[in-house]
Amino acid sequence: MAGTLSRLDTRSTHTIMEDSNSDDLGSRLDTTEWTVESRADEDDSVSLDRILPAHADSDTDEASRGLFDDLLEGEPIFDSKEVLRPSYTPDQLPHREEQITNMATILVTALRGDTPSNILIYGKTGTGKTASAKFVSEELETTSEKFDVLCEVEYINCEVTDTQYRVLAQLANKFIEKNERIISDRLETARALRQRVDEEGPEAIRSSAYDTVQALSSRIDSLEEELADIDPVPMTGWPTDRVYSTFFDAVDYDARVVVIMLDEIDKLVEKSGDDTLYNLSRMNSELENSRVSIMGISNDLKFTDFLDPRVKSSLGEEEIVFPPYDATQLRDILQQRADVAFKPETLTDEVIPLCAAFAAQEHGDARRALDLLRTAGELAERDRTDLVEESDVRTAQDKIELDRVIEVVRTLPTQSKLVLFATILLEENGVHSINTGEVFNIYKRLCGEIDADVLTQRRVTDLISELDMLGIVNAVVVSKGRYGRTKEISLSVPVAETEAVLLSDSRLGDIEDVQPFVQARFEN
Ligand code: ADP
Ligand code: MG
Image (tube, rainbow, N blue to C red; front, side, top):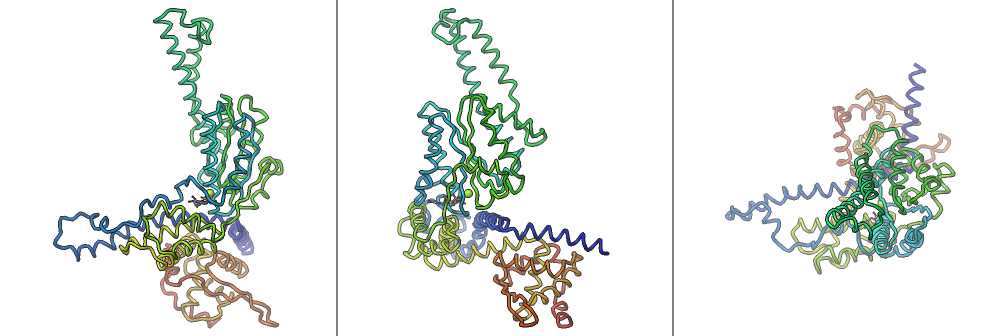
């Protein structure tokens, strides 16, 4: 029995260590924000259903009207909704001039054919890191076309590409593709020359780089061979050293300066350690023709704590911080996008300042600000008015916040869901100043009901703190005089919606009649 308990304990410690890690919480919140995006998209289809019956009532005589006619009718609010989506890269980034200039000052070295210092960019989500980095890299590539320096930026989103194998394979294949193009071009030129030789005779070779027709022919043969030998890296299956050396050879095939942009680099390190960064950062000492520089972008300010000191110092040669935007800055950002996204005079005066104020509270997140503005516009559009008003922004704020909560609750581990469910049951039954002991008692019974492992009260207390950090419950420590201290717990989220999400979990959904547990708490 003792053995079983300690195994349980170890497992639960593991869960909690992972979950109470603040970076993990941060990253979970980030993911949520992205999910909100897709939810908003899904909602477009929901609105169809909502509007259609109304249409049928008012326009029964016009049976020939198509499904979309009614929706298209009326003054549209948006000129281009795309402009408010995160995928859109604006060509101006107000209030990021300093960071952009800093990046450019470091990277301009590449245009001179030298290796730029590695750069580490920090800042919370929605502070414009990705947008600025992409902006700078586009400028760099365009300018390098005017110069004679081959300067390339490779962007990798490490949230998606999150293992060393995948990062190296993706990079290798990009360069293999580029090399293929280079070789094909050279081959084409050489073949054209041989054709001229065939037509005009051997004199045609004189003005070329080849001494003899023989040399030209063997060059063509070797280029053909090179092209045939090219072997892209499969997405799995090779030993990592082979992927690395393939990437190394592909980069070094030609003289070039390569900036590898690793966005969400903290996710890569969290998932797969720092081997990738170690390997990339030592490449320059062995490359003969090309140079590599790394630009890491992180949402987590402390992620370098987990790095090998050599990697840390190499990666952080230059550091650029993206501070949160304040409400005034967010207003400028929104205004600039709104001018393009909305039809003229569709926003009342309060809309942009209110979106900016809400997002400023949310750690100055421009993504949130844009989400709010777009959602407010969509809400107004659904009401088929031609004006977005303050109330639309407030409804949008509630909607986004609720979507966030639902997503966080949905992805909680089962144990946390049980703890949260216990709290909800108490609150629904009118229990005031809920304490940890009460939650624990109900929790134990819920566990029994679905055959889940029962954690210790200490662990449950930790899970409550985690729910507090996620903004789902509010737990305050109160002193009970000589009886010590306890936590008083209340819900910070709407009960009905949260309960519905919990019950949509197939395990919790099996709990049938919960009332007896709540009554039983008085017996404990
Ligand atoms: P991060 O990478 O720091 O999380 P992003 O660069 O993805 O943030 O920015 C989030 C959203 O806000 C994007 O839609 C981006 O275009 C927009 N944005 C951020 N900063 C600015 C700015 N200074 N000007 C205009 N748009 C911005
Ligand atoms: Mg980003």
